[in-house]
Image (cartoon, rainbow, N blue to C red):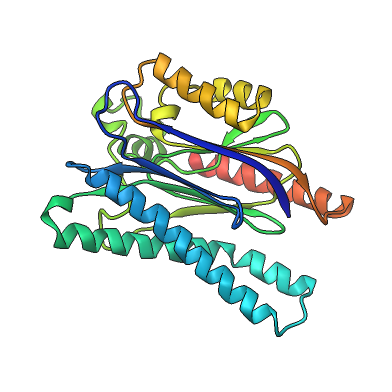
Length: 286
């Protein structure tokens, strides 16, 4: 079980009139979400709020059912491991339900036509955490003073670069933020997801592209390593605004302070597992 110091902050930025970002910090569930809405007449704000609330509600229901069923069973390591493996399914089903809800709203209500949102979510259990995303809101993992992008960027430019790595022609800037995948855009959606072990002093950063477009990974690494999550969030938002602040800015910083019920052997196996998964992720993102 992770003991987490968490903090989140959102800001309208310097150029936008409304903030269409939403975020969730639920330390009881150890569930953390950033959503960046798109759509006119504040429809993006509606979409990002719907997905944050829907995922939160669904995970609450799932965990309530788990606790209820566990009351009549003897809790053992096998049951705990099974629950850990099902983390992906819990989060994916919640994202799919949110997509269906937002898509139906956009079809039925003219004011919501064409609305959608990104979503990036991190969900912890006793042994690991799941990171899932749709869109271009990044999730970073800082481990042993290295920062890695563990989410997948769903933009036309990123998809083009992945499909044609040897193509020297870069797409125009207009494709930088053109989503190739988003919540509520189509009737069905596929989230990218990974499950990793966590370690003491790991830091996870979830953000909207209003931050990642302006602040480099090196700057993020330096700030979150030097400051507690609340101060780090303030400094990251300030820096993004200093560099222009053209978009809404949202950031969550999670610092794993300590871990309960882990022995040295489990830690060693977990580190090996993480190294293999990170190498696989990098290879598939190139």
